[in-house]
Length: 379
Image 1: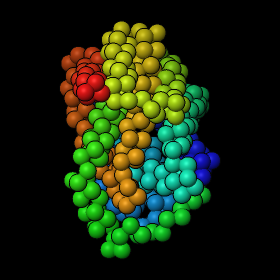
Image 2 (image 1 turned 90 degrees about the horizontal axis):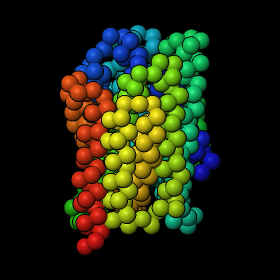
Image 3 (image 1 turned 45 degrees about the horizontal axis):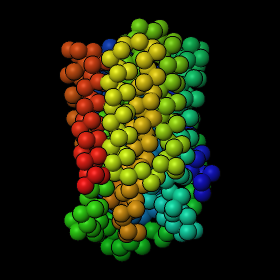
């Protein structure tokens, strides 16, 4: 199962459009506000579909959702390069958002329960950390290839390669084992599964805390990720250099993923210190405005990636076997809602003050969260 997971994680992020699609939008003539509105459309799609798709994953086959999702993304990427326009970009993000909702919750639930089935659920943090690392390695590989492929064939070439990878991802998903019987959590279907999951949230205070932690840790840096090409370009480097400097940032994030297994026992206060250090590094690296300072942004993303995996581990530990995909999707819903707020705020700040200032200001929520976690850990 782990080999399939790692392959799926790699292919899911081995998309040559990733490092250049913000540039595609800009080169098509879109403003920062229009680009941010596309990201909002992306997140709103997730908000609308996140929880229903999680309940669907608990009621039917999780593997089904894992191979269906990449097919939607393939159609969206094809639209972007065949008919580049605001409307096509918006349609592509709707499809991408639907894909994210289908996979979110279903993947974590399938992996956790398959590991639990063989008595290896204690390895969940290590396995998911490695899966995230494979995904980030794919981001770096696609970033490195994006420059040469773009130089050879422009946006159509990177778009065609991205569509082919999505198709390969869908094929790989069919290899996931799934010993759980579809709908075994509740015979009345996804609506009953959703009601049961939400009832569990109301009963368990510790579960609510674990669910809140996921969007708090994930949303801000997950949204800022979309603007990293613009932050890099704002340092004054040539556009051909942008993908290479993005590699530096994603190297840091990959290192954070690989540390998840070793840092699983990090306590509440320790998680707070981790977020605080990452926030300081993000603010310092973004405001410096030099290519060398992007190393600090890389360290920050490494810390945030590690915290993201650890937050997911805490959540999975608090969920019983029923409704696992549903509750993971509820946490994902919180992430999507918070992400929309970040997109709107980023557009307002960067338009008046620049990309570096916007990145730095969004380090503040992490500092606040860090203080709360350290205080709670001491109590």
